[in-house]
Length: 66
Image (cartoon, rainbow, N blue to C red; front, side, top):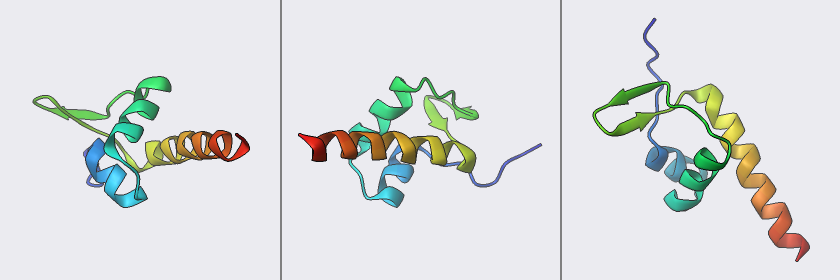
């Protein structure tokens, strides 16, 4: 099974309008595994995008509360 909608962390950051470092932090924090790798580039699925969005929302909520 080949997934066609795979995204790199930078592509996800561009899509969500967030800095790439913040997206990379969420991926590390939630220990999201890449669906596929091409060399050193990790690719994530559209379904993992939801978990990344939720993680980013958590960061924004905590920042607003301060």
